[in-house]
Length: 470
Image (cartoon, rainbow, N blue to C red; front, side):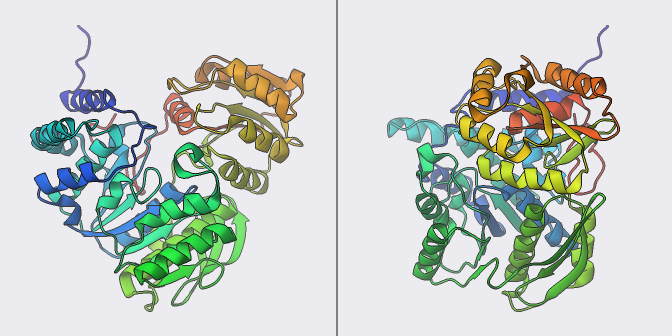
Protein backbone atom coordinates (compact mmCIF):
# COMPACT_ATOMS: atom_id res chain seq x y z
CA UNK A 1 0.00 0.00 0.00
CA UNK A 2 1.54 3.41 -0.95
CA UNK A 3 2.62 5.67 1.88
CA UNK A 4 0.01 8.32 2.62
CA UNK A 5 1.06 11.95 2.19
CA UNK A 6 0.97 13.92 5.47
CA UNK A 7 -2.27 15.87 5.68
CA UNK A 8 -0.56 19.14 6.68
CA UNK A 9 1.72 19.09 3.64
CA UNK A 10 -1.21 18.23 1.38
CA UNK A 11 -3.26 21.05 2.86
CA UNK A 12 -0.56 23.66 2.28
CA UNK A 13 -0.26 22.45 -1.30
CA UNK A 14 -4.01 22.55 -1.86
CA UNK A 15 -4.32 26.05 -0.40
CA UNK A 16 -1.54 27.30 -2.66
CA UNK A 17 -3.21 25.61 -5.64
CA UNK A 18 -6.39 27.50 -4.77
CA UNK A 19 -4.43 30.75 -4.66
CA UNK A 20 -2.80 29.99 -8.02
CA UNK A 21 -6.24 29.90 -9.65
CA UNK A 22 -6.33 33.68 -9.21
CA UNK A 23 -4.34 36.41 -11.00
CA UNK A 24 -0.76 35.08 -11.16
CA UNK A 25 2.48 36.25 -9.56
CA UNK A 26 3.46 38.51 -12.43
CA UNK A 27 0.00 40.10 -12.69
CA UNK A 28 0.23 42.52 -9.77
CA UNK A 29 -2.36 45.25 -10.07
CA UNK A 30 -1.72 48.95 -9.39
CA UNK A 31 -4.22 49.19 -6.56
CA UNK A 32 -4.22 49.34 -2.77
CA UNK A 33 -7.92 49.71 -1.86
CA UNK A 34 -8.64 45.93 -1.85
CA UNK A 35 -5.91 45.47 0.76
CA UNK A 36 -7.47 48.22 2.89
CA UNK A 37 -10.83 46.43 2.62
CA UNK A 38 -9.29 43.15 3.72
CA UNK A 39 -7.43 44.72 6.63
CA UNK A 40 -10.59 46.50 7.82
CA UNK A 41 -12.67 43.31 7.72
CA UNK A 42 -9.94 41.32 9.54
CA UNK A 43 -9.44 43.87 12.31
CA UNK A 44 -6.30 45.58 11.03
CA UNK A 45 -3.66 42.84 11.46
CA UNK A 46 -1.22 45.03 9.53
CA UNK A 47 -1.08 47.34 12.53
CA UNK A 48 -0.27 44.64 15.08
CA UNK A 49 3.49 45.33 15.09
CA UNK A 50 6.06 47.87 13.97
CA UNK A 51 7.23 47.59 10.36
CA UNK A 52 10.47 47.82 8.42
CA UNK A 53 9.65 47.86 4.71
CA UNK A 54 12.15 46.97 1.98
CA UNK A 55 11.75 48.07 -1.66
CA UNK A 56 14.14 48.38 -4.60
CA UNK A 57 15.21 46.39 -7.65
CA UNK A 58 18.02 44.10 -6.49
CA UNK A 59 18.98 42.71 -3.10
CA UNK A 60 15.60 43.07 -1.37
CA UNK A 61 15.34 39.51 -0.07
CA UNK A 62 18.96 39.31 1.10
CA UNK A 63 18.65 42.67 2.85
CA UNK A 64 15.36 41.64 4.49
CA UNK A 65 16.96 38.44 5.78
CA UNK A 66 19.93 40.43 7.16
CA UNK A 67 17.59 42.84 8.96
CA UNK A 68 15.67 39.87 10.34
CA UNK A 69 18.88 38.30 11.68
CA UNK A 70 19.84 41.58 13.32
CA UNK A 71 16.45 41.98 14.99
CA UNK A 72 16.54 38.41 16.26
CA UNK A 73 20.00 39.06 17.73
CA UNK A 74 18.39 41.89 19.70
CA UNK A 75 15.86 39.43 21.21
CA UNK A 76 12.94 40.74 19.18
CA UNK A 77 10.24 38.46 17.78
CA UNK A 78 10.26 38.91 14.01
CA UNK A 79 7.92 38.18 11.14
CA UNK A 80 9.51 38.35 7.69
CA UNK A 81 7.54 38.39 4.44
CA UNK A 82 9.52 37.96 1.21
CA UNK A 83 8.89 36.71 -2.32
CA UNK A 84 8.99 34.66 -4.40
CA UNK A 85 9.67 31.27 -2.83
CA UNK A 86 12.06 28.70 -4.28
CA UNK A 87 10.69 25.53 -2.78
CA UNK A 88 7.51 25.76 -0.71
CA UNK A 89 5.18 28.71 -0.34
CA UNK A 90 5.68 28.69 3.44
CA UNK A 91 9.20 30.07 2.86
CA UNK A 92 7.65 33.48 2.15
CA UNK A 93 6.26 33.89 5.67
CA UNK A 94 8.93 33.51 8.34
CA UNK A 95 8.44 33.68 12.11
CA UNK A 96 11.53 34.00 14.27
CA UNK A 97 13.82 33.01 11.43
CA UNK A 98 11.95 29.89 10.29
CA UNK A 99 9.33 29.31 7.61
CA UNK A 100 5.87 29.36 9.15
CA UNK A 101 4.70 25.91 10.24
CA UNK A 102 2.26 24.06 8.03
CA UNK A 103 -0.20 23.89 10.91
CA UNK A 104 -0.22 27.67 11.37
CA UNK A 105 -0.38 28.34 7.64
CA UNK A 106 -3.44 26.08 7.29
CA UNK A 107 -5.15 27.21 10.49
CA UNK A 108 -4.90 30.94 9.77
CA UNK A 109 -5.99 30.46 6.16
CA UNK A 110 -9.08 28.57 7.32
CA UNK A 111 -9.86 31.39 9.76
CA UNK A 112 -9.59 34.19 7.20
CA UNK A 113 -11.11 32.34 4.21
CA UNK A 114 -14.70 33.57 4.89
CA UNK A 115 -13.46 37.18 5.15
CA UNK A 116 -11.60 36.80 1.85
CA UNK A 117 -14.91 35.80 0.28
CA UNK A 118 -16.53 39.01 1.57
CA UNK A 119 -13.74 41.13 0.05
CA UNK A 120 -14.05 39.31 -3.28
CA UNK A 121 -17.81 39.92 -3.29
CA UNK A 122 -17.33 43.63 -2.64
CA UNK A 123 -14.74 43.83 -5.42
CA UNK A 124 -17.09 42.04 -7.84
CA UNK A 125 -19.85 44.57 -7.09
CA UNK A 126 -17.38 47.34 -7.95
CA UNK A 127 -16.40 45.64 -11.20
CA UNK A 128 -12.94 44.79 -9.84
CA UNK A 129 -10.97 41.56 -10.07
CA UNK A 130 -10.84 39.33 -6.95
CA UNK A 131 -7.82 39.51 -4.67
CA UNK A 132 -4.71 38.41 -6.57
CA UNK A 133 -2.27 35.68 -5.55
CA UNK A 134 0.17 38.22 -4.11
CA UNK A 135 -2.57 40.14 -2.30
CA UNK A 136 -3.84 36.91 -0.74
CA UNK A 137 -0.40 35.88 0.47
CA UNK A 138 0.15 39.36 1.92
CA UNK A 139 -3.18 39.21 3.77
CA UNK A 140 -2.24 35.77 5.09
CA UNK A 141 1.20 37.02 6.22
CA UNK A 142 -0.30 39.95 8.16
CA UNK A 143 -2.82 37.60 9.78
CA UNK A 144 -0.11 35.11 10.81
CA UNK A 145 2.12 37.83 12.24
CA UNK A 146 -0.81 39.24 14.26
CA UNK A 147 -1.68 35.77 15.55
CA UNK A 148 1.83 34.89 16.73
CA UNK A 149 2.24 37.83 17.67
CA UNK A 150 5.54 39.36 16.52
CA UNK A 151 7.30 42.54 17.67
CA UNK A 152 8.47 43.61 14.19
CA UNK A 153 7.39 42.84 10.65
CA UNK A 154 10.04 42.98 7.91
CA UNK A 155 8.11 43.35 4.65
CA UNK A 156 9.61 43.04 1.18
CA UNK A 157 7.56 44.71 -1.51
CA UNK A 158 6.61 42.45 -4.37
CA UNK A 159 6.74 45.07 -7.10
CA UNK A 160 6.89 48.83 -7.03
CA UNK A 161 6.02 50.63 -3.84
CA UNK A 162 3.08 53.02 -3.60
CA UNK A 163 0.49 50.47 -4.77
CA UNK A 164 2.24 47.33 -3.58
CA UNK A 165 0.06 45.16 -1.33
CA UNK A 166 2.54 45.43 1.55
CA UNK A 167 2.20 49.23 1.51
CA UNK A 168 -1.13 49.04 3.31
CA UNK A 169 1.04 49.02 6.46
CA UNK A 170 2.75 52.20 7.65
CA UNK A 171 6.42 51.49 8.27
CA UNK A 172 8.73 53.04 10.82
CA UNK A 173 11.78 52.50 8.58
CA UNK A 174 11.79 52.42 4.78
CA UNK A 175 14.73 50.68 3.11
CA UNK A 176 15.43 51.16 -0.61
CA UNK A 177 17.95 48.79 -2.21
CA UNK A 178 19.70 49.67 -5.52
CA UNK A 179 17.26 50.72 -8.24
CA UNK A 180 17.78 49.69 -11.86
CA UNK A 181 15.65 48.93 -14.90
CA UNK A 182 13.30 45.98 -14.32
CA UNK A 183 9.54 45.45 -14.76
CA UNK A 184 9.63 48.54 -16.98
CA UNK A 185 6.23 47.74 -18.50
CA UNK A 186 4.65 48.45 -15.10
CA UNK A 187 7.08 50.75 -13.29
CA UNK A 188 8.46 52.98 -16.04
CA UNK A 189 11.41 52.85 -18.41
CA UNK A 190 13.81 55.16 -16.54
CA UNK A 191 15.44 54.89 -13.12
CA UNK A 192 13.71 58.12 -12.11
CA UNK A 193 10.24 56.77 -12.92
CA UNK A 194 10.93 53.50 -11.10
CA UNK A 195 12.34 55.36 -8.08
CA UNK A 196 9.26 57.57 -7.91
CA UNK A 197 7.03 54.50 -7.68
CA UNK A 198 9.24 52.78 -5.09
CA UNK A 199 9.41 56.01 -3.06
CA UNK A 200 5.70 55.49 -2.42
CA UNK A 201 6.61 53.46 0.69
CA UNK A 202 8.01 56.60 2.36
CA UNK A 203 5.46 57.92 4.84
CA UNK A 204 5.35 60.63 7.54
CA UNK A 205 6.89 59.35 10.74
CA UNK A 206 9.27 57.10 8.86
CA UNK A 207 13.03 57.07 8.30
CA UNK A 208 14.51 56.51 4.82
CA UNK A 209 17.62 54.35 4.52
CA UNK A 210 18.79 54.09 0.91
CA UNK A 211 21.51 52.25 -0.95
CA UNK A 212 23.71 54.27 -3.27
CA UNK A 213 21.59 55.22 -6.29
CA UNK A 214 22.11 56.73 -9.71
CA UNK A 215 21.54 60.52 -9.44
CA UNK A 216 18.12 60.45 -11.12
CA UNK A 217 16.80 57.83 -8.68
CA UNK A 218 18.40 59.53 -5.67
CA UNK A 219 16.70 62.83 -6.58
CA UNK A 220 13.28 61.16 -6.56
CA UNK A 221 13.89 59.50 -3.19
CA UNK A 222 15.16 62.76 -1.68
CA UNK A 223 12.12 64.64 -2.95
CA UNK A 224 9.75 62.05 -1.46
CA UNK A 225 11.57 62.05 1.89
CA UNK A 226 11.51 65.85 2.10
CA UNK A 227 7.82 65.96 1.17
CA UNK A 228 7.03 63.42 3.91
CA UNK A 229 9.25 65.29 6.38
CA UNK A 230 11.32 62.23 7.29
CA UNK A 231 15.05 61.89 7.97
CA UNK A 232 17.07 60.23 5.20
CA UNK A 233 20.47 58.56 5.03
CA UNK A 234 22.26 57.33 1.89
CA UNK A 235 24.96 54.73 1.42
CA UNK A 236 28.22 56.39 0.43
CA UNK A 237 27.31 59.57 2.29
CA UNK A 238 26.34 58.71 5.86
CA UNK A 239 27.13 54.99 5.95
CA UNK A 240 28.68 52.19 3.91
CA UNK A 241 31.27 49.44 3.64
CA UNK A 242 34.56 50.72 5.07
CA UNK A 243 36.69 47.64 4.35
CA UNK A 244 36.16 44.29 2.70
CA UNK A 245 38.36 41.19 2.43
CA UNK A 246 36.97 38.20 0.45
CA UNK A 247 37.72 34.81 1.94
CA UNK A 248 36.69 31.17 2.01
CA UNK A 249 32.97 30.90 2.67
CA UNK A 250 32.29 34.63 2.52
CA UNK A 251 34.12 37.82 3.45
CA UNK A 252 35.39 39.91 6.34
CA UNK A 253 33.92 43.39 6.36
CA UNK A 254 33.99 46.58 8.40
CA UNK A 255 30.91 48.80 8.23
CA UNK A 256 30.61 52.50 8.92
CA UNK A 257 27.14 52.86 10.32
CA UNK A 258 25.01 55.87 11.22
CA UNK A 259 26.12 55.86 14.86
CA UNK A 260 29.43 54.01 14.87
CA UNK A 261 31.89 51.75 13.09
CA UNK A 262 31.58 47.96 13.23
CA UNK A 263 34.91 46.29 12.36
CA UNK A 264 35.94 42.80 11.36
CA UNK A 265 32.55 41.15 10.86
CA UNK A 266 32.48 37.74 9.15
CA UNK A 267 29.69 37.77 6.57
CA UNK A 268 29.04 34.25 5.21
CA UNK A 269 27.97 35.50 1.77
CA UNK A 270 29.96 36.30 -1.37
CA UNK A 271 30.31 39.52 -3.29
CA UNK A 272 30.67 43.27 -2.83
CA UNK A 273 26.91 43.58 -3.36
CA UNK A 274 26.20 41.44 -0.29
CA UNK A 275 28.60 43.53 1.81
CA UNK A 276 26.69 46.61 0.65
CA UNK A 277 23.38 44.92 1.48
CA UNK A 278 24.71 44.26 4.99
CA UNK A 279 25.73 47.90 5.42
CA UNK A 280 22.21 48.88 4.33
CA UNK A 281 20.68 46.42 6.82
CA UNK A 282 22.95 47.72 9.60
CA UNK A 283 21.85 51.31 8.99
CA UNK A 284 18.22 50.17 8.97
CA UNK A 285 18.73 48.48 12.34
CA UNK A 286 20.31 51.63 13.74
CA UNK A 287 17.40 53.71 12.46
CA UNK A 288 14.83 51.31 13.91
CA UNK A 289 16.43 50.60 17.28
CA UNK A 290 17.97 53.96 18.14
CA UNK A 291 16.71 56.49 15.63
CA UNK A 292 20.08 56.44 13.91
CA UNK A 293 21.84 57.87 16.97
CA UNK A 294 22.52 54.78 19.07
CA UNK A 295 25.42 52.45 18.26
CA UNK A 296 24.55 48.75 18.00
CA UNK A 297 26.28 46.24 20.23
CA UNK A 298 29.07 44.45 18.36
CA UNK A 299 28.14 41.08 19.87
CA UNK A 300 24.64 41.44 18.41
CA UNK A 301 25.95 42.14 14.93
CA UNK A 302 28.40 39.23 15.18
CA UNK A 303 25.56 36.97 16.27
CA UNK A 304 23.47 38.17 13.36
CA UNK A 305 26.29 37.43 10.90
CA UNK A 306 26.63 33.89 12.25
CA UNK A 307 23.01 33.18 11.36
CA UNK A 308 22.61 35.00 8.04
CA UNK A 309 21.70 32.84 5.08
CA UNK A 310 20.49 33.81 1.61
CA UNK A 311 19.35 30.68 -0.27
CA UNK A 312 19.83 30.76 -4.01
CA UNK A 313 22.21 33.72 -3.91
CA UNK A 314 25.66 32.47 -5.01
CA UNK A 315 24.94 29.30 -3.09
CA UNK A 316 27.21 26.29 -3.63
CA UNK A 317 25.12 23.11 -3.75
CA UNK A 318 27.79 20.60 -4.79
CA UNK A 319 31.55 20.37 -5.17
CA UNK A 320 33.71 18.41 -7.60
CA UNK A 321 32.66 20.15 -9.83
CA UNK A 322 31.25 23.17 -8.01
CA UNK A 323 27.55 23.68 -8.77
CA UNK A 324 26.54 27.22 -7.86
CA UNK A 325 23.06 28.72 -8.09
CA UNK A 326 22.25 32.41 -8.24
CA UNK A 327 18.79 33.95 -8.56
CA UNK A 328 19.90 37.15 -10.32
CA UNK A 329 17.30 37.89 -12.98
CA UNK A 330 18.10 41.31 -14.48
CA UNK A 331 21.25 42.84 -16.00
CA UNK A 332 22.30 44.78 -12.89
CA UNK A 333 21.90 41.73 -10.68
CA UNK A 334 23.81 39.53 -13.12
CA UNK A 335 26.69 42.00 -13.27
CA UNK A 336 27.00 42.10 -9.46
CA UNK A 337 26.93 38.31 -9.20
CA UNK A 338 29.49 37.89 -12.03
CA UNK A 339 31.98 40.09 -10.20
CA UNK A 340 31.49 37.96 -7.08
CA UNK A 341 31.92 34.67 -8.98
CA UNK A 342 35.21 35.82 -10.46
CA UNK A 343 36.39 37.20 -7.13
CA UNK A 344 35.38 34.41 -4.77
CA UNK A 345 35.37 30.99 -6.41
CA UNK A 346 38.76 30.64 -8.15
CA UNK A 347 37.31 28.74 -11.13
CA UNK A 348 39.37 27.99 -14.21
CA UNK A 349 36.38 27.03 -16.35
CA UNK A 350 32.68 27.78 -16.07
CA UNK A 351 29.63 26.31 -17.76
CA UNK A 352 26.54 28.50 -17.61
CA UNK A 353 23.06 26.99 -17.27
CA UNK A 354 20.57 29.76 -18.01
CA UNK A 355 16.79 30.06 -18.00
CA UNK A 356 14.89 33.35 -18.27
CA UNK A 357 11.23 34.32 -17.90
CA UNK A 358 9.27 36.13 -20.60
CA UNK A 359 8.79 39.45 -18.80
CA UNK A 360 12.57 39.96 -18.49
CA UNK A 361 14.96 41.70 -20.89
CA UNK A 362 16.43 38.40 -22.01
CA UNK A 363 18.55 39.84 -24.81
CA UNK A 364 20.25 42.35 -22.53
CA UNK A 365 20.73 39.66 -19.87
CA UNK A 366 22.53 37.44 -22.38
CA UNK A 367 24.67 40.41 -23.45
CA UNK A 368 25.59 40.81 -19.79
CA UNK A 369 26.48 37.13 -19.50
CA UNK A 370 28.77 37.42 -22.53
CA UNK A 371 30.42 40.66 -21.41
CA UNK A 372 31.06 39.41 -17.89
CA UNK A 373 31.99 35.78 -18.50
CA UNK A 374 33.37 35.46 -22.04
CA UNK A 375 36.94 34.82 -20.83
CA UNK A 376 35.87 32.18 -18.30
CA UNK A 377 32.89 30.40 -19.87
CA UNK A 378 33.53 27.42 -22.09
CA UNK A 379 29.86 26.66 -22.82
CA UNK A 380 26.38 27.98 -22.15
CA UNK A 381 23.36 25.69 -21.89
CA UNK A 382 19.99 27.37 -22.36
CA UNK A 383 17.09 25.67 -20.64
CA UNK A 384 13.75 26.45 -19.02
CA UNK A 385 11.99 25.95 -15.72
CA UNK A 386 8.52 24.45 -15.55
CA UNK A 387 7.03 27.95 -15.28
CA UNK A 388 4.53 28.78 -18.01
CA UNK A 389 6.38 32.10 -18.34
CA UNK A 390 9.72 30.48 -19.26
CA UNK A 391 11.25 31.42 -22.62
CA UNK A 392 11.83 28.30 -24.78
CA UNK A 393 15.51 27.25 -24.94
CA UNK A 394 15.72 27.50 -28.73
CA UNK A 395 14.62 31.12 -28.56
CA UNK A 396 17.19 31.85 -25.86
CA UNK A 397 19.87 30.15 -27.99
CA UNK A 398 19.22 32.59 -30.83
CA UNK A 399 19.57 35.48 -28.40
CA UNK A 400 22.82 34.02 -27.08
CA UNK A 401 24.26 33.98 -30.59
CA UNK A 402 23.17 37.60 -31.07
CA UNK A 403 24.87 38.45 -27.78
CA UNK A 404 28.23 37.18 -29.05
CA UNK A 405 28.47 33.54 -27.92
CA UNK A 406 29.98 31.24 -30.55
CA UNK A 407 27.66 28.67 -32.07
CA UNK A 408 29.82 25.74 -30.95
CA UNK A 409 29.52 26.88 -27.31
CA UNK A 410 25.72 27.27 -27.29
CA UNK A 411 23.62 24.27 -26.28
CA UNK A 412 20.01 23.66 -25.26
CA UNK A 413 18.19 21.33 -22.89
CA UNK A 414 14.45 21.08 -22.49
CA UNK A 415 14.56 20.60 -18.70
CA UNK A 416 16.66 21.75 -15.77
CA UNK A 417 17.80 18.24 -14.81
CA UNK A 418 18.96 17.55 -18.38
CA UNK A 419 20.87 20.85 -18.42
CA UNK A 420 22.64 20.06 -15.15
CA UNK A 421 23.58 16.55 -16.34
CA UNK A 422 24.92 17.95 -19.59
CA UNK A 423 26.94 20.67 -17.80
CA UNK A 424 28.51 18.20 -15.37
CA UNK A 425 29.43 15.96 -18.28
CA UNK A 426 31.00 18.88 -20.11
CA UNK A 427 33.22 19.74 -17.11
CA UNK A 428 34.20 16.06 -16.80
CA UNK A 429 35.11 15.89 -20.49
CA UNK A 430 37.52 18.78 -20.05
CA UNK A 431 39.01 17.15 -16.93
CA UNK A 432 38.17 20.28 -14.92
CA UNK A 433 36.28 18.59 -12.07
CA UNK A 434 38.58 20.02 -9.38
CA UNK A 435 38.72 23.63 -10.59
CA UNK A 436 35.75 23.97 -12.95
CA UNK A 437 32.24 24.97 -12.03
CA UNK A 438 28.63 25.26 -13.17
CA UNK A 439 26.54 28.38 -12.57
CA UNK A 440 22.77 27.98 -12.76
CA UNK A 441 21.11 31.37 -13.05
CA UNK A 442 18.71 33.70 -14.86
CA UNK A 443 15.46 33.19 -12.93
CA UNK A 444 14.24 32.39 -9.44
CA UNK A 445 12.10 29.56 -10.79
CA UNK A 446 15.08 27.83 -12.44
CA UNK A 447 17.21 28.21 -9.31
CA UNK A 448 14.36 26.86 -7.19
CA UNK A 449 14.10 23.76 -9.36
CA UNK A 450 17.86 23.23 -9.28
CA UNK A 451 17.88 23.49 -5.49
CA UNK A 452 15.09 20.93 -5.25
CA UNK A 453 16.86 18.57 -7.66
CA UNK A 454 20.09 18.82 -5.67
CA UNK A 455 18.44 18.44 -2.28
CA UNK A 456 18.76 21.98 -0.90
CA UNK A 457 16.29 23.39 1.62
CA UNK A 458 15.48 26.80 3.07
CA UNK A 459 15.66 26.08 6.79
CA UNK A 460 15.51 29.72 7.81
CA UNK A 461 18.05 31.62 9.89
CA UNK A 462 20.69 29.06 10.80
CA UNK A 463 18.10 26.47 11.86
CA UNK A 464 17.22 22.86 11.18
CA UNK A 465 14.23 21.89 9.04
CA UNK A 466 10.91 22.13 10.78
CA UNK A 467 9.06 18.92 11.56
CA UNK A 468 6.82 18.02 8.67
CA UNK A 469 8.41 20.48 6.26
CA UNK A 470 8.64 19.12 2.74
